[in-house]
Length: 275
Image (cartoon, rainbow, N blue to C red):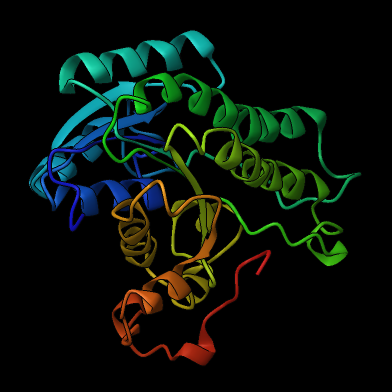
């Protein structure tokens, strides 16, 4: 399977960042992209809405369906899945990309923030997967891809921000369990995580200025890595915890300069968490 032409992707948190980049890469093949996110109107701190994302998807060559979806709300998720199937005739791929972050210690994390991270990251991933599976069972090459880290249970990945680490690892535990649970159904469940920090709005919000952003790789590396995973046979590629540059090297990519900002060398890049 060489491309995603005619496939329908349901991407959470796709109004910007990695989710949008994955959608645009699929759109370049002629895919249908459901933009399932909360930002319906311009945000004072975050660029992009589901409508601007839809315009970018269509400009890239795909068909777009922007839907207001809070992944914490079961009725909204279920209705959005049904609408995607009604409009595009089916569902082939789910990308669990929506995520909340707070890099704070235990005493500095309000329970409201703890709840948000676990409701969006873990519960949202579980809920979207649960609602997508019945539709994916009818797809030719069904994939679920979670933007979450490898299960590396070392204390130094937890100590600085226990709540956030628990929430992201919860997404990865969904991969571990669901890959096996739905293996006979032929639905692939995999995780993808960046080796380096990625230049996104989230990076800006947690304190990254221009000098930090320049030391991050561009979102396109995650989009290209996701494309490699999503075009592999679901029945034989499931339960994997992939790192972006590793999966691209396996696919034959040797030059990663295009994913760096001008003037930045590989040694200058900031490593991401959990790797």
